Amino acid sequence: MRHDEMIGKVQALAQLPDRGTAERATQAVVSTLAERLPSGLARHVAAQLPPDMAAAMREAADASAGRDSGAAGERFGLTTFTGRVAARAGTDEDRALRDAAAVLEVLDAALAPELTERMANALPGGHPGTAAGGPRDPGHGAIRLTPGGCPGTRTVALNG
Image (cartoon, rainbow, N blue to C red; front, side):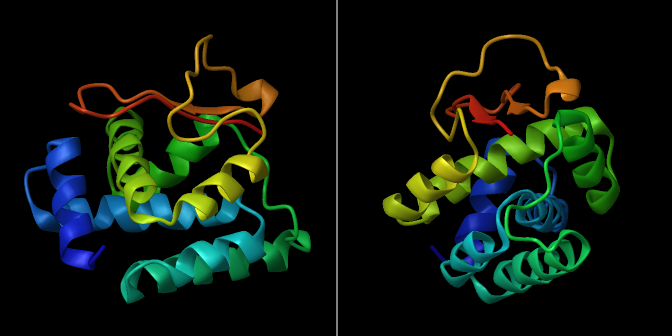
């Protein structure tokens, strides 16, 4: 999927007012996801993304790997995930959660199925398309993104 197409889909799914906002949201989510994934897997994901998104993912993966010896990726919960996305995108955490659900839905459609499966295996207990259920509990290392107001999206569960 091309960059313009991905940004357009994020804008539509998240009901964002303009492409610039969709671009910021996408970059924020991709960077935060790269910190959460094992660095090698993040680089494989980056290889299937358009150049701007790939660069953001590789940069975040490299920085995360440098902090933690990086093989497994950082473990953090929903509060940290949405906080990082919100800070990067310049928005509040509720908006960041909705934007992240839209971006992850677009990534799910854009990536090769076997890569999506590898991401699911790297994030135990869930992947795009699985039901999350249960309360948000950042104390247990779970990231659960439930699309609120994103027509056509599914619950995305990323557990750690």
